[in-house]
Length: 342
Image (tube, rainbow, N blue to C red):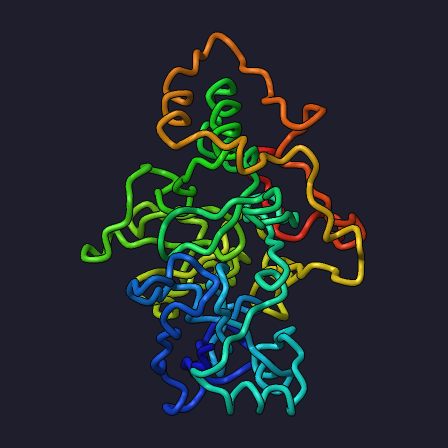
């Protein structure tokens, strides 16, 4: 577990800048103890941009970092989230002090990572991410990416104009094919990020898989507020390292918060016994073909023929179905950003 202090930003009107003692601290995880396979086995520690700010309010301060696959940080107590009006994890002071006392000797796992149920970054719905018991959502293969997706959701984003290819790709991801998610390519020019070239650094939406290069950033996603045009500020420089933090036009800015609504994170309801049930029809370990076979299948997709859904178990099922109880999701779904309706 890492407890870090990050300087508070000017992201919200409701608070002032934190003093100089709130600067980034070392947060190297214990080797071989994290549940995140991308940081185990002696590999270099992952330092993703999302660790620099709270996953709830997108601001700094004293944060607790999850040692699971999500790679997120959170304000731990209500006191820590006061300046940014953050929801926080709601830890009581005794529990928080216990975490602090353990320091690097202890590990912290958020509810999503603890129960292996993560939200799809495209639609916002919860799904099982347990690779040994029928996963519904799959994590991007990039080392510093903690985003999960339903196979159907990521397929529709990556292949919006080719339904046959999207269907085939969905089947391959459900079968175990590793993939790079949409946040690693600019939405406008489709090129990757180059952190050594300022104009090619990314502007990253914190609510959906929308990413632009600095040079490709639309004019209506502005770094300043235009009071005459009643246009809110949607971009902030200097908060994320070598990137711009943005909220794209799909998300309405709340005047009192300076951010979109903060209902985008959903933890699993562990009190519901049905939430722990394995998704029927999800591929069993012996059903999963090797990666070469999956790549050959994807390459051989014929756009003129729409592949039929793969049959698993006793019935045909769509991998994007979620077992998560509907009462967890207000309408519209948290995290829903219009990707699948565009």
